[in-house]
View 1 (cartoon, rainbow, N blue to C red):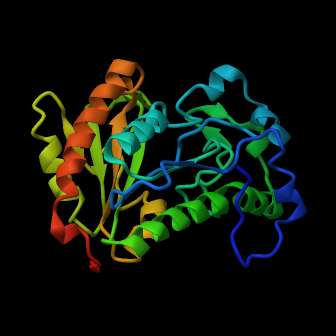
View 2: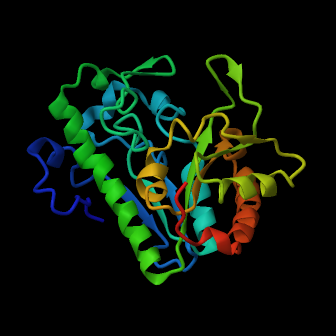
Length: 275
């Protein structure tokens, strides 16, 4: 797949064009593009890939295997749900350490110089042109792919749901996270509230409402593609130890798949509403 560029935005800058080489992956991976379910799955932190031009950002392989580089298990969970639900999915092609596609460009957390105590040498002291080049090469093409996939579903109807898939670490900064799953949302309760209720039917799972992060604070992808349009949306956070083995992934795909199958049958979700 060739890299995708935003339409009508002119040719990419020389810096941006040089960031993705011929042997590098594209900025977005498209899965089950003709899926028939009125649901788009997205995975912002699916990959730990770094383009060759950025030289692994000055990090070793051990650092790039950690949660600082990607959401461990999230990509495979997304692919399993896409197959089970016959839903299209869009997965980001590069590590969040290159640029976090779930942050607005310019946000201090968009390109971090330090992540969970680890210094990211190649991210220090980037000038504006370098930051914009990364957004142009990696962030905007991903979001354009999301727009295209969502538009295809909207053209065929009914109005689709938007579901963003993440994983989180069992502990951060010395503090344990007690939740097995967390549902993130902001103003629109249509998707999130019934999803929480369905997940809570699993007695063995502790389900968080806007935990361990809040959809009122970190929701760039949700806001950009669904909230502004009045389409039902939310995000899931799965504790990554549930997604580190085939058995764990199978269980989480079954738990979420069952819940989403029931959610998709709720007619009030498949329409435009503003909150």
